[in-house]
Image (cartoon, rainbow, N blue to C red):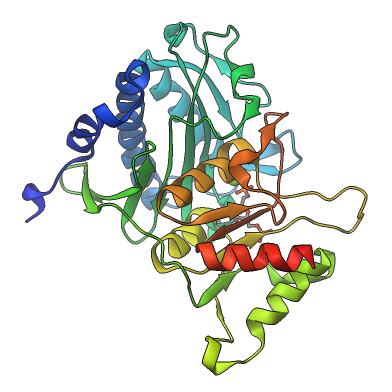
Length: 334
Ligand code: AHM
Ligand code: MG
């Protein structure tokens, strides 16, 4: 059965005509290389405890998070692999304060890759699910290329993620639907298992870190209270599912419907702050979900209408089924 399935490389070749012609080759090369790196990351995760790769590396990143050994290792292998493609003009990574510029991919149709190599790293030491999230943007011939990603986040050439779970799953969109692949661990190939994913218009589940309830916007509090209030005829209460690893959480809502939320911390109403990063967490997930018929919002604005002003900018996100996201926005307006 497996050998009858379409490989990721075959799928990318078949979709070339749907991509912007000047970028199609670069997008395909980069996505194939990211898939190769994902297979390496997946093996390393499986052996991390055996190879003394768990725990902290010592030190913090620029946003003050303690850095794990696998965060740094993941950054290094991703950057090395992307450099080899010859199509990448710069990499914006969660683990580097400034973009990593690459002369190999400079030129009018170079591509900037925004990436979180190992997201959800608080799950690493408890053998929980983590992921890689990526977004490909045009460099617009800029040199240095990094600043090309500051601006409207809607202009992604492709975006996606890898989920390191019981199976290793890669989901991507290049603007022509959202497609899911599963790693065949025997051959190292990603095979098409979830073509043309469509997110249900409505779901039965929500995901949010409820420990933060006191710091939410009143509309956010009222929305979650609504989802928890029994009303059998209208499918409430919703069930709560929360992994604490964005890829695992969003993947559930992409396939099964419902809504994942990481709203702003409003403890200081004059300075609301999101947790998740726009360029390499929020915007790529928004692209993938919209291509599957879902929606992504900050609560008050469509995510893909946002404009990035900083590489590591944080924004709130409400993402999933179109109906639940629209309903959440209603609560924010009340
Ligand atoms: P990280 O980039 O430091 O790993 O943080 C991002 C992760 C997301 O994967 C997840 O959705 C969120 O943090 C969970 O945060 P919390 O532990 O506050 O619920
Ligand atoms: Mg992250």
